[in-house]
Image (tube, rainbow, N blue to C red; front, side, top):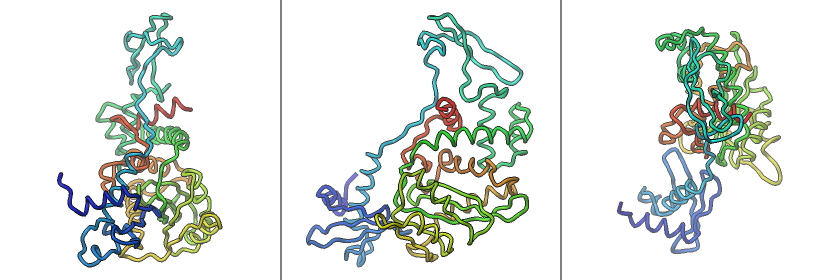
Length: 368
């Protein structure tokens, strides 16, 4: 592919050390012809620069190209945590690799491969993550995928029936509760590499018919849903626990924090994000256009609202449904804005395998 003169100059600026990262949405780039420094800012329209070339001609200037090349280089060197599907490689008794298949163990609902060890002459079967479950692991992960992608518990039950799996909607809910808790404990130990700009907002839900609010914290660059909390009131609830959880999960504070004008967001910001050593900038006056908006957060709220219409409210505040949907959003669901990646992929946490639910459950089970 032939590079334009602006792209070539952008690479020259990057190679000469002329790009300085302020945060994930703002860069400072040196001029090639003077001592001047230009600001390159990410807006909803893309990267915008205050240099004459961009301001007068409206083109992507060499300074913006330098920032884009810097981001590409940063993505290439980002250290990934890769979660691979679990494979059977040795005997569970003597750990010998000399094992062979030796028939199938069957019950009414499931068939499990048995193995024999040539070293210790013992036989065993493995059903990692699904031990003592009478149903096929594929049925369980299919149920979770159907439910979190938009089906109700009863519709999921009917879909499984077409596959020859006879379960009740309560059984499916029990599966969700069990495996969401298992995966959450495992993934909580992995630190996502989020950006320096975070967003927060709230959306109302119904819990046993009562109006309740779900508060969420999301990373701006990767769309990673960092933390959440459920509270009874919108503008007066103490949302500090959500901020504290976000700091614990990411291991840092943001450089820029975006919210609406609610007083409780600012109060929690002053107590959790503001300090003399590191001052987080709080943008709390949101506009409907230009670069100061919360459109990305509103998009996630719409995603949650679409899902909430199906389950029509929750039974309890600590329902596994919300945590489960957070896992689905972060690790399973591909996002168009991320070019088909999941937020976890964008944060350096890669989950491999055709069935990501199985990969996560098996790894979580083995790392308990």
